[in-house]
Image: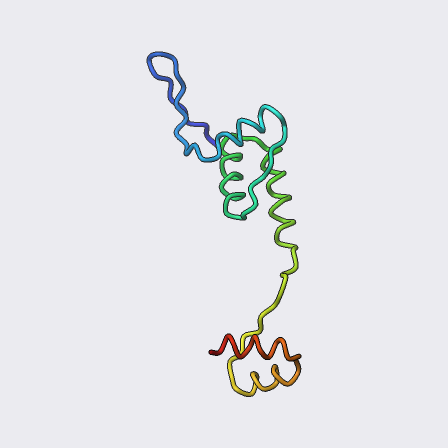
Length: 107
């Protein structure tokens, strides 16, 4: 990784990165821990920034969170019906509540 930064004539250091996750990065450096984003997309964005700033502990923490998110079982499963025969088999094997839901989706 390459930390590209520029020092202006007055001594300020410019880090050419998006500031969206900079507060989280800074707080991690201060405290050693931060609440992580809930969405996979934001976790990946934050992980990219942590890699840029060479913060291996944060990179590993995010990686563990990403792995645990992929192991979550879905709340429900909705079958994809591709034929009338499959529809009849599904309706015949389920209860009334599911039949009502199926009819509502078709309408």
